[in-house]
Amino acid sequence: MKALDNLYNVITREIRIIFKYPIYLTCMVVVPCLCAVFFTTLMESGQPMEMPIGVVDNDNTTTTRKLTRMLDSFQSSKVVAHYPSVDDARHAIQTGEIYGFMYFPKHTTDKLLASRQPKISFYYSRTSLLAGTLIFKDMKTMALLGSAAVGKATLQAKGYSSELIMPAIQPIVVDAHTIGNPWVNYNIYLSTMLIPGCFLLFIFLLTPFSFGTELKFGNSRELMETAGDNSIVAILGKLIPHTLIYFVVMTGLMWYLFDYLLFPAPGGIWRMMLLGYLSVIGAQGFSLAIFGLVPTLRMSMSLCSLMGVLSYSMVGSAFPVFAMDPPLQALSWLFPLRHYYMIYQLCVFNAYPMVDALSHILCLVGFALMPYLLTKRIGNVMRHYDYIS
Image (cartoon, rainbow, N blue to C red):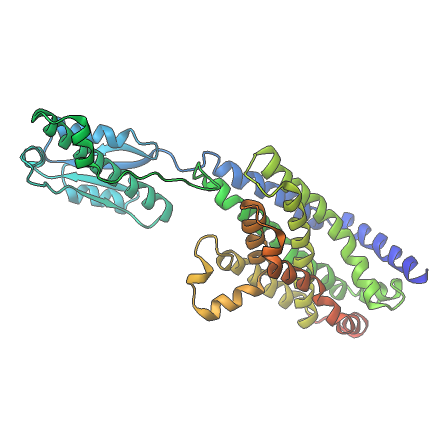
């Protein structure tokens, strides 16, 4: 009973601290919610629309103008300018006016009608990976469709029927199925990682901050007295109010993504909630363990921020982990966001059984239990450490 009374006293003390200093509720509630709204509205359309491109049409015939109109009709591309030369169009790419341009040389139509395989060129910038990929896809599709249309008209003029023309123009018909995200919506691809990633980053920073400020302001001994000189009670008492607030915010974020915005979650939103809660306690345990190993406010927060920022690279959503060097593949297991992403991919996005992600679940549980190995060290730091600015 004495330990429970002390735990209650530490919890109430921590609640007063949270409401006394605005930085806590700002970083726990306000900023994560703003990040969620920012990222989801930034990519609200799912894909970039009407990205500017140009055309260099030195042939200037009905056929090349038709191809230009066809290119302009694509959802991702918009022809905003015609340039007299390749040098002018290249300069426009370099200055950021357009993302790419199509070049039709002279006699393109004549060679096309004479079946002499004219060469048309398209140039695009890969400075932006997504924009370059979409522009390349549109221009390549336009080139294929344009040549197919001319070939079909030529064969029709020779008297061939449609049953004979189509196999000659398109020998293989592709039937593609985009599983899980048929809209190819980049909001679904990215926001489900970026938003929890931002939230876990704030957990990484606030956990060592809450313990480090006890040392900085000389309140650590008061904390231990309130906890009855029990390290576990002191740690749990400080973490429980934070954890409850994080759980509420995580619930709101999951509801916003998967119930309000209707992001696909075939595995069920309750699995997503469970994953969110497990990620919260995993991030808390991991960051507190870093504080236990480096018990200074400045260094522990710096290490936690470094791990939080590196998580975006090691998570595997942009560049797959299996394509990284073996040492980096092993290092990826140290990042809680990586395990969150893998459990989400397996059990929520693809609805596999939870047992298929057991290794990642155990890693998050292990992160949550890491501070237990350092309770004695953290207690000694709180009792005897003198802060040096």
